[in-house]
Image (cartoon, helix red, strand yellow):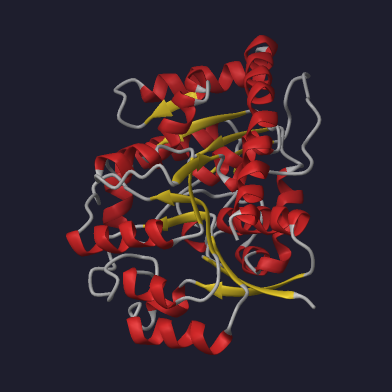
Length: 357
């Protein structure tokens, strides 16, 4: 008889989130037998403002054999102050104690966006209780563990694992020749105010558009919000809407395998580049992108919007990425030195969850 696994995540909003969810699911399928998956989009709980009674009753009525949460940046406070749990996830102590099945939190990210920091005391209590009563709990390797410590919530129960967005069972063969299909992977918000804050002003956004145009870079969107500013996109909005369906995630990955290099704005773009073995530059408008680069050997491939000379850095490093085989060879070496270790750590964590049932 198949086991009923609920899988909570952010479905159909961002192609990168879909990849993380798919990769988590693949590894559980590898280690558990006969799982029947139930997609639970996290938004269904937001509509009820993470109402405690609603959440408890929902899981009581559906009687899952396990609840898997993640991957993705599902730990966030801002925008969820009116929810019963006071944060993005539908869990607090009362809800966790009411559950009658194992709960696996896999490779979650704490989203501390620049200019939007802060957790309330109630949110911290919900977070702490969720860790305490979970079967196993892990954060992705993007600086989330440091944030957990800063919040005063560190527990030795929490494990840092590779972001599930890195874990693929195939990749693109090394291409040491001059690169041909080179793309930019944008990251924009629906709010113009947030965009300007994220990029330190409209002028910087226009500078990036000029850079893309000068280098004939088509843009690879991950969400409908990315259809701003750039003139040429790899896929149109209708194609994106189709690919945002979770069952089409593998088709989206195949699109990336056509690329020879990536300039990524999103953390997901960074992870796909590294996971699929496609050389890239990583443009930090979020601390998680910079943290990942600096703590995994990719500092020479990172450009931060806060650096005064970011424009010259971007143009210089992009030229080297396209034209300098030594620069690309170094990227491949860093990636290959990490990837096997990351795969092993990810597999080991899922195995530990299985043991802790």
